Image (cartoon, rainbow, N blue to C red; front, side):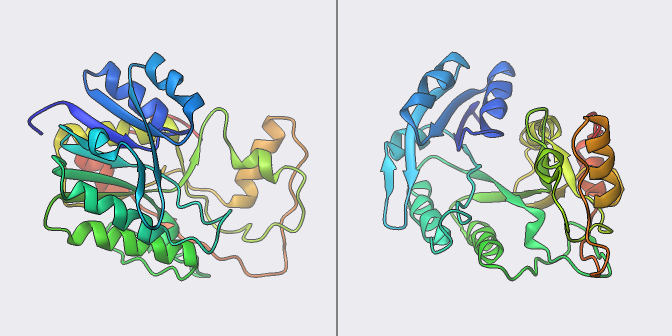
Length: 270
């Protein structure tokens, strides 16, 4: 990168602290949000705010100015298919790509998910060379978007797939507390702390690792049942109850090569 200007599409739970961290490290950040109320918070954190919203036919907002002069675009937006399963998120990204290909953007960092890999009874080991094989609507759309970005000749893309995101104010143990008949209790957990996500992204940018695909997950190994039961005990929450009759399905995300490549040590315990 010849300049320090970065555009971040999606300044939410991960994107906003990422933007703030990059500002603190000398980058000039443009950040997008879909709500006017969030703009002031971006300004307070040193980020230039833009109201940007994708849809299937066009991009709402000042997308040209948002991309102008930046060499790197970080795409960090949820597909939104849980609330709107009929939505075509691939078409939304196609609309975005049209603008990117006519801008100063040379590199894209796309935040994807390790959910693009199927959960299976043998708990397969997933490495950065494993091909995505999930079949749900949301995961197939993520796979299609990854391929769209990787095949463009107008910019280079790095795909960064995170496992389940956790943080001080966000943990699935709180959601699972008190629930009964939870499936896949014997499957391994695949989680990553937000602080590690921010550190990994920063190191990828610093090392200019474009045109690559990586998975990122904390190497901590434990079953879902043991991990979430212990979490609830430690935090004085009602214990979850796991299904003991059905065979568990899952996978093991191995991001050893990424950690070695960027010399990342997972500092945050789960």
